[in-house]
Image (cartoon, rainbow over all chains, first blue to last red; front, side, top):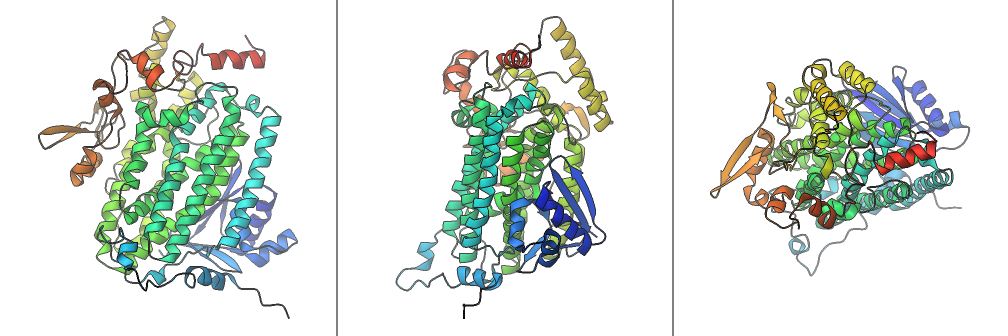
Length: 89
Length: 500
C-alpha cells in the first residue's frame, strides 16, 4: 500500500474541490497546513468533474484544477470527466 | 449544426501526432544529432503520452489565469507595504538565498528544456518540453518581480544574477544545472525532469513556501505556489520520461538507473541549502527539514520507487545514508555559513533560545549532543565581543562544490574526506556519492570551476578577501554580509517598527 496525494492552495475554489474529493474517496486524510491543504489516500484518488461542478454550482473543467494545484504524488491520468492518481503497488 | 467539441484525448492526439511530419529529403538522424549517443534506445515515439493531455490552447488559457491571480497579489502586496508584515527581518535572508541561488536555476531550466525539446524527434516529448520551458521562463520572471519589492527595502538583493555566476556558495546550484545541461537530452530529462522535479522539488517548494506564508510573506508564497502548480505537470513529465524509457527497451534500464543514482545524490547535496533555510532561516517554522525529508522523500519517494520496481528500478544508491544525514545536514550547513558570515551576501545569526529548544525537540538524537554546544560557545564569544568569523576559505568537494562540511555516517565528529587521483592530480570529495560521480566521468568534473581554487589562482581579483567580495562579487561589504545584529537591515526594521 502506498499513499497517493494531492495538495491544493487553501482558497474558496479548493474548498469545493476538497469536498468533492472527500465524497468520492471516502478514506482520505485531509491535512491543513499554512496556505495549503494536502489530501492523502491509499493507492488511488479521483477528482470527478461532475462532483466538483455540483459542489460549486457551476460547470467545472477538469483542467481548471491546474490553477489551484500545488503538487501531486502518483501516476496521473486525466480525461474530460476526471483525473486519477494511482500507485500500482 | 455546430461542430462537436473535441474531447481531451482527441485534441491531444491531433496536437502530438498529426502535427509531426516525415523527413523526406533530409536525414532524420542529422536533424536530431543528440538522440542516440547516450545509448538510449527508442523504438516507438508514438507511445509517448502526456497523462494531463495538455494542449496549447488550454495551456495558454490556464497559465494566463494563474498570472492574473499572481500579479493581482503582487500589486496588493506592494501597495500595502507587505514587507512590513513579515514575521522578522531575518526572514528576508532566506529570500536573498532564494533569489541568488534558486531563481537563476529557473532560467537555466528554461534554457535546458528549450534545448532538450529541440533534440527529441518525438513530438509528444517535444511539446511537453516546450511547455515546461515556457513555465520556467515564467518562474524566473515572477520571482524577479516578487523580489523587486523587497529590493527597495532590504540589502543583498541587488546583484543576484552577477552573484550567481561568481559567489563561492552559489557555484553549488549553478554547477548542478550546468552539469545537467551539458549532459545529453535523456540524461537531462532524468536529472531535472525526474530526479529533481519529481523526487526533490516538493521539498523546496511545498514546505518552504508554506513557511513563507507562515512568516507573512504573501508575495513569495504566491509565486511559490503558482510555480508549483506548473511543477505538478513537470513532475508528471519526469515520471512519464522514466516509464517511457523503460518500456521502450530493456537496455535502457542500467543507463537510467545510473542517472537516477547520480542525480539523486547531486540533489541531496544541493538541497542542504533548503534544509538550512527551513531549520534556521524561517523565524516561524512549519516543519523541520527532517520531517519534510520523511514526508516527501521517504514516504513520497518510497511510494514512487516501489511503483517503479516493476521495471527493475531500485531505490537510488546511497538513499539509505540520508536516513542518518537528515539528522545533521541543516545544522552543519548553517554553522558553515555562520562561521563564513563575513563572506556571504546575506546575514547570519545564532538561533534564539526558543529556536534552539525547537531544534532539540525536532532533533532529539543529535541537536543537544553535537550542535547546541557549538551555538552556546558562539553565544559566549559574541557576548565577549568576539563574534566568530573563520579566517580560512573552505575546501570544496570537486563534484557538488559544497564545502567539506559533512561528517562520516558513523561518526558525526569526523568530517568525511574522499579523494581520487586522475592523470596525476588529486581531487577531493565530500562523500562516496560524489566520488563515484567523478570516477564515472572524470573528464567532465576535472573542469569544475571551483570558486576557492579560482581565488587562490588569482582569477577573482584581490589580494584581500574584502577586495574579492566588493570588486569581484559586487557585494556591498559591511552592508550585505556579516551578522544580522547591527546590520542596516536590522536598523531600518527597528525604525519602521518604532522599536529601539
